[in-house]
Length: 125
Image (cartoon, rainbow, N blue to C red; front, side):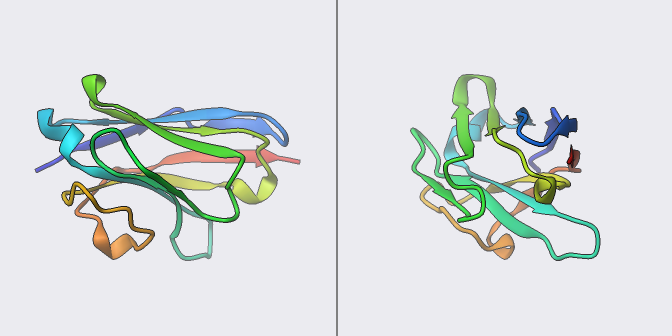
């Protein structure tokens, strides 16, 4: 059982930045592909970014490309989401997820095996 704990959410003005963190409980964290998803009120959960295991090949949703960066620190069992140039439409609960497939880099929520509890990001205009 992999436990994931997100942190770093909060309230920020449009144009600002936040960095989300997701700490994993497993020492084999480097073997997992990781993803970030978000869900706004009344909307379905949507893909944000993903990174493969190991050194990490990345994938981004078009809506966040060039603004968000996903990265991982395998020594600290942590994946990050650096969010710059935030917009009000980025407001959502952000979830990290783990895919036990090392080489996976999926935008599909169903491909992920474990999920964190989420952290709220609110961007004011």
